[in-house]
Image 1 (cartoon, helix red, strand yellow):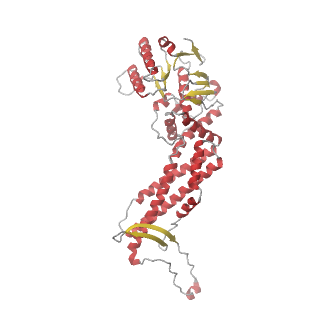
Image 2 (cartoon, rainbow, N blue to C red; image 1 turned 90 degrees about the vertical axis):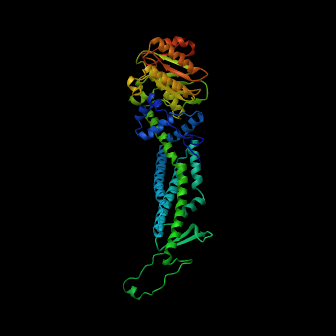
Image 3 (cartoon, one colour; image 1 turned 45 degrees about the vertical axis):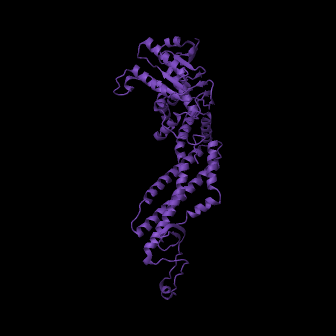
Length: 487
């Protein structure tokens, strides 16, 4: 069964997200403030940087996150249970490696087979116990989300009933094996009277015999030990005995390995997916602690996007007091928006807050706003002007030329319905040339050939006149508030 806690229709496979996107929006730095595990954070950011195109995927994750936020112990318990399964998988893989080693003599083959069988059976028993523990955990907290409810139903289907109990008992087959044990085997011979398959049916451990001590031992009646039914292989046939037992025990080990592997393949990938919810849970907790507004946006396939009292995550993560941060309303109904304003008036902060809200919303997380309604985007793309030292080492192109190259590369990836965020491009070229060049690029983004929406922060005020009614114009004021400018 292909089950995922991130995708309602199963794990679609996760490619690498755009690191530049999360870096431009400072999501990496923001989340480092309240989530310090680098490995898990990188996985979280890779998920966020690949927004799902269907609103149902975002809703699916939001439901699961709500379950975890209402029952934190459920998240901790699942982390422990799946971490335990991952540890068993590693143990299981190590035992699998040794099972591939073949011994040349019969006695070593038996001893090796016996050891491998003991390890494999022990791992399989622990694996089934861990799976049953996961089911009991989900039963205690009774999650409401589709994802966790489906997981609970799946685990219960595997661990309940007579078959599961019988399987558990069968995995107790070996116990602590010794040379005195009585093994019941079934072997099949081929046409050449050679053993073609082995099957271990039963192992009996003789009850320990208490010996008399002292004078009682001297006069105790000597009695022959009871002979078991079946065939007892004489010592002179030790090679055959070892071959039969060694082969049968390897077959048992392979069966136990297959049982464990089936469980690991289905459930251990969920352990990695929980990294996403760990980081999301930390984010929600940190923002609630600062008494900032959080809302799960309404996501639509078309239409505009509106956010009321939108806060910038990066500022909220770093500033101790939330009341010092100025929120803004955002109306992204227009397919093109140009933002102008003086230095240090919050242009880039506003652009960043829009991109962050879009990514977090499509990832299934609440956004820092009083209310929000967002259109689902096919992708989010950013291109920020950077200092000269941040460009590729050894690149002989100027910043203007390299920005043009990056834009050209980006337009080849963009799909219709994408959101493109541009920050202070062409600021090192001639003023009029920069405005005209950016005008043609923005028109191309809005054309039928690309079909993307854009929000562009610029100091090139001539761009506003060139675009006219093709784009809305917002201007930042000294108090970090935005004002819509009537064309």
